[in-house]
Each structure stands twice: as C-alpha cells, then as structure tokens.
Length: 342
Length: 228
Image (cartoon, rainbow over all chains, first blue to last red):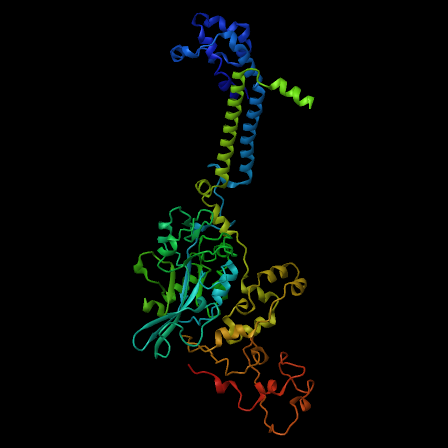
C-alpha cells in the first residue's frame, strides 16, 4: 500500500524543501515537516535542484504550507480508500480470470478441442455422388434441425440443385426451397417448361471446406478461420456481418443469419456456413446429412483411419473436386454427372 | 447525523490546497480504477483479444454444440425385428432416422431406461410425406428408383398397404361383384367383418367412397406406376 501512496504524496513535499536552498538539510528535521517526512521515503528527498529552480514564482513559505501538508496527510485516508479500490479491481480482474479462459498462460498445455480427439491426425473426406442422389431433400431437413439453420429457404448450409439439360443444349438449374421439400415433377427453372429433356441429375451442395478458402482471406476481422483438421468456421463474436465472405465464396456456401431468429450461433447478422457438422465429427459421428441420406449419395469419413471405409471408397470410385480450376482447392469430392458438367 | 458530521470533520480538507490535493487524489484514484476495470473488461469480453490469447476457444464452442441425430446403428440394440426386416428389404441402406427423424433424445433416454424411453420419448410413425419425398415421380430421379404419381396412386395412407421395413405391399383385394343396387359396403363388410391383413387398415364407420379408393376394380399400382 505504502509504495502506491508515496509517489503521489511526495509531490507537494519537495516544494518546501527546495524553497529555501540554504535550509536543505534542516528542512527534513523541521517540526512542521515531520508529518511529511513520515510519508516521504528517504530516497525521494534529494530532488534535482535545476528542475525546481525556475519555479520561483510558486515558492511558498514553509509555514504557510504546513496546513496544506496536514490536509494532504488527512486526505491520505481517502487516498487509502482509493488505493484499496484499485487493489480490489486488480484482485477482481484476477478472480474474473478464473471464470474466463482468456488469461490462459503460455505455460498451459494446449488442451485438445475434444478429449481423445486429435485434429492433426484427421483426414476428413466427403464424397458426394450426384448420380445416385434422388433429390428427396432429407439432407436439407436434417441439416436445418441439427444445426438450427433458420427456416426460410434462402438460409441453407446445404441444398440440392437439379441440373436439367434440354435437347437444345440449354442448362436449367432449379432448387425449389433449397430442395427441403423434395422436387416437383418438372423443372421449375424459368423457361424450362415444356422443353424436351436430354439429361438431368441432382447435385447436392454444401461447403467445400477449401484448403485455400477465399472467405478466410477476405474477412477484415479474421472472424472466419480454418481449424487444424481443415474445417472453416466462423466466430460469431468477431464477425461484423459485412458479407464479404458471402460474396467471395464461388460455391455460394455462405449466408448471413437473419435478425431475431433461432440461428446456429444464436447471433443474428453474422456469417454462417456448413461446418461438416463439426460438433458431430469430433465425437465420432457422421454429419447429419450423411447420416440421413437414404441412398448413400453422401459419404464421409477419416481417410487416415484404416477401419473407415472412406479411403477404400475413394480408391475404388476415384471422385474429383468440383471446379478445381477456381483455385480454392475444394475438398468435397464429387462423383457422377456433376463432374462432367463442370 | 452527528456521527457523519464528526467523520466529515476528521477527514475534510482544511485548506484550499488540501481540497485541491484531495480532489486530485480522488480523481487519480478513480482514473486508475476505471483503467484497471476497462483493461480487465477488454480482455474478458473483447472477442479479438480473446482470440489472440486463446485461439481455440471458438472451435471448442462449435465442437461443444449439442446433437439431435444419433448413429442409426444404435436402434438395432432394441428394435431387432424391424432391423432384421429392413436389412432384408430394398430399404436396407436407409438409416432409421431418414424416416423416423432425429432420435438421439430417444436413444439417450433408452440407454438409461429402455421402458421409460418408450413411454417418454416416443418415436413418431412417419407420414406419407416421407414416402412421397423419395417416390413421387420427378425429373432427374434415377431410373432404378420406384416412382409413382401420387395423385394417380391410391389416395389412402401409404402405410395402410406398404410395410416400410420389409418393403412388402399388401395389395387391397379388388371388388369383383357388381356395385349397382347395393346398400353400403359396411352392411355386409361390417367394421368387424373385413379381414384386415394390415394392422393399419382403417376401421370404424367408412363411406363407400373411402372403401372404393382402394378396393374399386381397376385400381392398382400397375396402372399408374411410372416407367421412367
């Protein structure tokens, strides 16, 4: 306490000391200054005289200062109180640190994100077969339920597109309500009605978890980032909702959460996207869309795990990324007509 | 009151300088205190400082979210007959939750007390909507998938004829006798009279039209099934 007290209290005392240069030594013994001496430490006594020399105009006789010094020492009580409050603040911050993990010291061991889960060893692989997809839309339903994605169709972490090529060579793409209610008999794309169809297929879409994600690069506040196992996540607390990432994604995998809705992060107005069900895969479960797909159009697994069939699937079917020429190194691997079109 | 006045008399500054000093000290103390509090709050609540100090905090939050769907493999532990039927049927690759919806709550309750789970966290019987989703005729559906035009198919509930687990459909017997000049169906085929081969056959008082939706001559999936 006294260390905090002294520098502040020491200020008025050098003035009387230097005020009478011939009395530098006795000033310390002067009865009027006795109280001040009790407060001022010995090492604070010899103030540099040149610094005080120009202060002639404010020199005050020592006798007049005595009450001031006395008053100052009386206000020590108040000062002590505030010193106590300051110390309380420091202690309070220390107590806060126990409840918020922000004061983690460098010496702490880095805890795994989930016990028994080492992201560094995971080679998450997602294979989508556009030939076998039947467009039932259950993946969209499951995703919305599992991740609390807002109800309206424009908010979708995963969706299904129907690509219809007519005999005149035109490509019509429709995705009514993101495919959440399945698909009607014919394409709902404008202009597609009544045209003879040459070929058609369903294309399930989701975040590609690009190895070089443009969304991470454009974020001005670094709110979106890649985890060690390659999943691109959004920190809703840091996101300012500028929407740069939404426009930068060539696969259209992002959206901004609406205001006043039940949203994945419970924060309206921030960017959101498919996480490959990050909360499921690190507990040994498959993403909800993979779990629910009735025709196994979506396959997911850890290619580093010998017990996981995904590595064998990739080896046998040789899937390829979708639009790799866009340069983002997408990590969802596609099979079937989606690749031929791309 | 006097006590407060006495207290004030002991602490009050007695000169102008003393007053100035007191105010300055009080001000300085308040400044330091607010600085400490501000810095503490910034570290505790600024997501940007938080991230620089503890970069994995947000990934941990994402990882800790609760699930709704379980691994469909756990259902076989209790529901053995249904699983056996399913595995022998064309629906064998379909997980339970594709039709029954998210079941983690049910399976979690069942892991603690199976009987209690049946009573408290019931599993819904899927509606026609789930069947139609996959089996309604639509452009781009693979040819190998059985497709119907719902409006031309039987208008009753799918599950009245189809067993979704085995994939077997009980074809409703077609009325072979003439229908003219006859009283209501139920006069002869009373609610107790018909032999329901399917436990989900509707019972109670039905109109003739409801009976004929399925039992009229000429009705049948062959007439309406689509060959893609």
